[in-house]
Amino acid sequence: MSANNVIGSFEDSIEQGISLVSQQAKAQVASTVKTAATQTTGNTFVTQSSTQSDNLSQSLDAQGPTDQFNETGTQASQNKTQNPQDNVKALQEKKQLEQEDQVDREKKLKDTRQKLQQLHNQVYYDPTFKNRKKEQTVQDKIEREDQEKEQKQMVDFEEKKKKEPPIALRQAQTRAEINRGASG
Image (cartoon, rainbow, N blue to C red; front, side, top):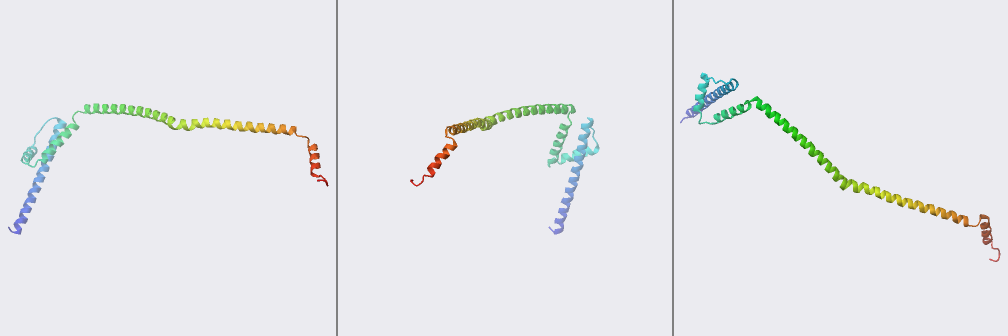
């Protein structure tokens, strides 16, 4: 084989591929138009281009992916446009279920918050702050006892002061003891 023959066969292959792709695209467009017309009007009509595209798609069945795409695309479009009333009912049911779920979530959240608050009170708040109140009462009691002792000491001190001799007498006694004179 010469180089020209090889290049020529590549060119021919590319041209054949391009023509097959364009024919497939035309066939796909025709089948999509046919399907859309059938779904919207409910009537099936056949045109020359659609019969040619059907013949072309039958000849290309060996390739497969185009048929799978047509079937999948047709089924998806049929599912979307089956019945608008069913869609409305489904949406209403979905909204109702979402509302019920929301109410359930709120109720569970409220219960959980209450349980958490109770647990918080039992584990942290009550032991910490209620004991402080008790400790404060104990501290208050100790402070009161200290004040009572101080008051009692003040009363005792005042009583001792009353029992002591007058200042003049004490000064006279201490003067005599400090100035003993020559004897002592």
